[in-house]
Image (cartoon, rainbow, N blue to C red; front, side, top):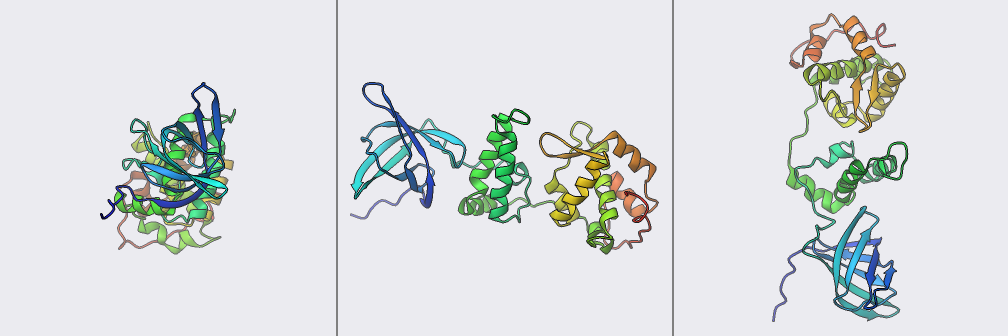
Length: 295
């Protein structure tokens, strides 16, 4: 008889998990097997400790920051280890579930073009910052959201599936910022500062309840390398023109508002930035303010 095709695709993995369970006498046991393959419905692990079929487990996945209930479906000796198959309980949400209404790139403040190493690095930094145990900036809700995003984007296969299913059009870069006066590494720095201030000013005027813009949004709209923007934002923060919120977004300060209004550029092209009315690629660019403004 032909074997029934598995309903859930399994992928090869290699990371440590934690199993906790109670025996018939109520004693709690734990072990740390290594997961070898996983799917939305369960996983296979290699353990040095056997566990009886039907045992109810609490499975911790430190890699994903989640906990789930499961049941042992088989336990087979394989040399010095035991191959154990577990199935997630129907009442539990799979640790690999994906919320397609959530923009995971936005959560992690990343560009969709970010490589996997960058995703891992950014998650480690943000997770440490918002971990509930951090007495200065701990935020449990934010931490759980970061972990949810990382579960998908941190895995290359799941990320590819998410990108395919999400299929949403990313913000389009404004042609204005592709002009040489913005992209030049050194000479364009003063223009990038003013461009960021104008975008934050326009956002605050449009939406006073949510005046923030993320680094990823700035990167997409301005189409400027992140390392350039990070230096620009550092400078503007030091000058007290912008501030970073607890959620790692950026917003204009009162000092920044005063600066923008005092130095509103004469060019029509930048007045459009302040009003949010856009930019037509056919317009000519003629900047004369770079050397005298945001310095």
